[in-house]
Length: 354
Image 1 (cartoon, rainbow, N blue to C red):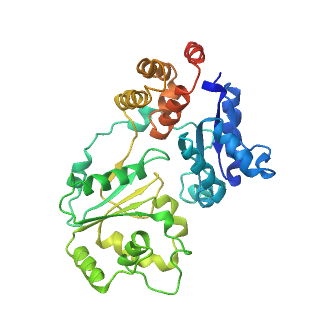
Image 2 (image 1 turned 180 degrees about the horizontal axis):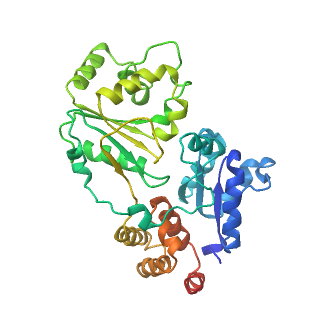
Image 3 (image 1 turned 90 degrees about the vertical axis):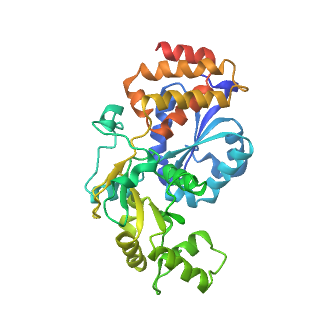
C-alpha cells in the first residue's frame, strides 16, 4: 500500500505508551501502510530535525492521548509543527497500565485484545433522545444526569457541543450559566491543600486563571446557584475518581448533591447513584455515510474524484464486519477517512478487492 506522495502515517506518543503504540505500528506495517514512529529512539540524537522530517513527510499524524502526552512539551511541539504544515491530526486514546489498574479496581477489567463491541452490541434495544429533551427524564427539581460512553465515543465533544449550543441560545434556556469542568484538570498541583474550596473557586481557576473575581462576582454566582440557574458539565469522572484530591472532595460532593449537573464517564461501575442514565453510542449507520460524505466534500479540491471516494470507502467498511463495527466510534472513523484519502487510488482499489 502506498500513500499519496510516498508519505507515511506518523505515530506521535509519549514514551510511557511505547509498548502499546509499537503494537499499533506493527499492525499498520503488516497491513502494508507506510508508518513512522520513534521506535529506535532516533529522535534522541537529533530531536528537532528528526521530528521535523517525520512531520513533513506525514500524510496524517495520529497522536496517542494520555495525561503524560498532554504534559510533554516535545509532544506539544510535534502537534504544533504539524498544524503549521496543515497536516491532519487525529487524536487517539492510548490506555496505559495505570488506567488498566483503575479499571480493575472499578470492576470492569476487560481483555486488552478484545475488539470494541460491534455496532449491534453497542446499540442493543435502546431508544434515541434529542439532546434538547434529555432533562425531561429528570423528575426531581434538581436535574442530575449520568452520561456513559466508551473511549473515543464523543463524551467530551458532546459536552463542548451542548455548551456551544447553549451559548448560541439554542437549548436549555432556563440556565443563565453553563459551566464545563474537565475533571482530570482538578489536580493537587492546581488546587493545593490547606484551604477550603467552593464552587466559585473552580470557576475562577478554570476560566479566570489570571484574574481575581470580585466579592460582587462571587455573591452573584452564589445567587445564581441558589436559584437553580447554573448547570455544571462535569466531564471525565472515570479519569478522576481514583485520584480525587482530598481538599476537593467536599466541593464536588456539594455540586453533585445540590446543583443541576451532567456527569460523564466511561461505563464503569461507579459509586454515585443516578436515577437518569444516558449512553452515547456513537454514529448510526446513516451518520457514518453522512460523515464520510462531508469529509470528502471538504477535501474535494485536493483529491481527484472525492465525491466517489466516500461511496468506495462505505463499500469497503460494509464488506468487513469488524471494521464496520469500530467505524461507529467517531474518532476511529476520522482516522479511517484520513488514511483512505491519502492512499494511492490504485491501492484503494486493491484493498477493497481483498
